[in-house]
Length: 185
Image (cartoon, rainbow, N blue to C red; front, side, top):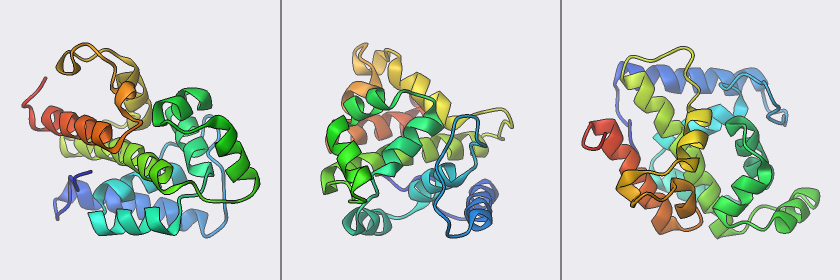
């Protein structure tokens, strides 16, 4: 994923500060994203941080091992059923449950795709913030709705159909970049 929003624009700095403050408020305790939780919680902060991180940082996160609960956290944040997200990401639900139960990290490819989805959510947040922000905008739910909707630039296919591969995630990230720049509307 490209490192969109990297730099020193005031909007990006505000999002980065909000994400860091949200993470700091939670401390080091492990918490789960639950229905109705403030979208700027731990999972949202993770999405924003991953979207503004450089490629080396994202690689390091994947290589260290992405915890299985990240997929569950993303599903809760996006307000989508877990089985929708596991299918879209190409992750076996049984494998996810086993890794969660045994406190094992996701396989590298699965973790990489989960981080890629987190980046998409973070990019949507950055995009809206750069456009002037909207307090009632929920980037995770917007991404969820957009992933399920046919998109003309994808020949009428749904973006969720492309999440199971790194190339597909790159395609979706590029499309979001075009939307952000106004190249594609």
